[in-house]
Image (cartoon, rainbow, N blue to C red; front, side):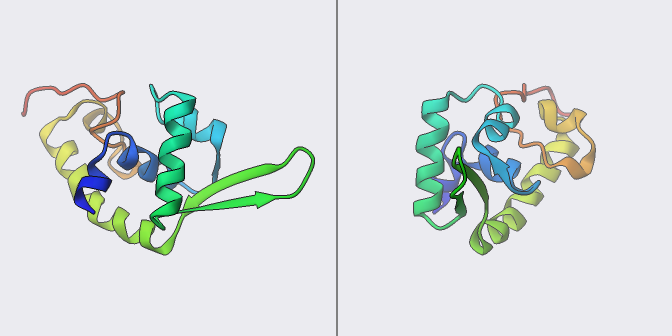
Length: 116
């Protein structure tokens, strides 16, 4: 499980979904640098592993929203101390963002800076 959660983009996707339900385009905008193809593949994996729920609304056009499952929310509780550590030690975007925003230090937006 640690290897799965540690795969590039998985944690960033989970952290983005921590903000609430999101459509694919919202996730793509919030997880900077991920391609559509890779985001789609990672979402399929996260749904298959039970960390993310996929909700399909049968409208025209069909609407798909993603959210954290109970297991995903519990995993966020484990990731939160890591993000707090990143804030404390100045890891890129995590250090610049407000402490409650949960910007993951491993997102492509984060550039590592030296520790204070």
